[in-house]
Image (cartoon, rainbow, N blue to C red):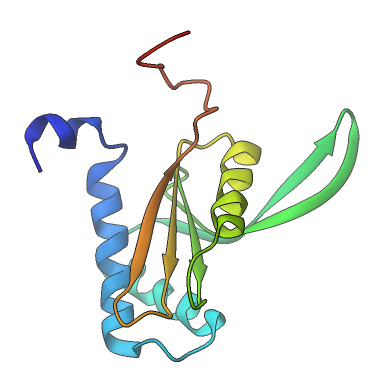
Length: 140
């Protein structure tokens, strides 16, 4: 990775720590457990490396002035990055849309989705294209 491409990444140091902790959990536990066990294992992994987080963060959804429901985000890291943990044969469009909805509802720029089911941890960084602070490179 070049210095120029690294400077374009959102929260590169924090993302690196998060992904490192996820890989450590996957290395120790493998790929056979239920999602709740990976979520529980991530907590001491984050604590060990000093990553600040909140678990099961509620997001209230509103339409006009009416409350229409609530989401729960697996982890909100340092108030900046949404982390969604999955244990599925493969990530689907619905999983990405779920993280997109979380990003939109919480007005956050970056989400990470991690799938523990595969032989090696699969993770993807997901950007919120609607984030008000985002500067479009090619405005129309």
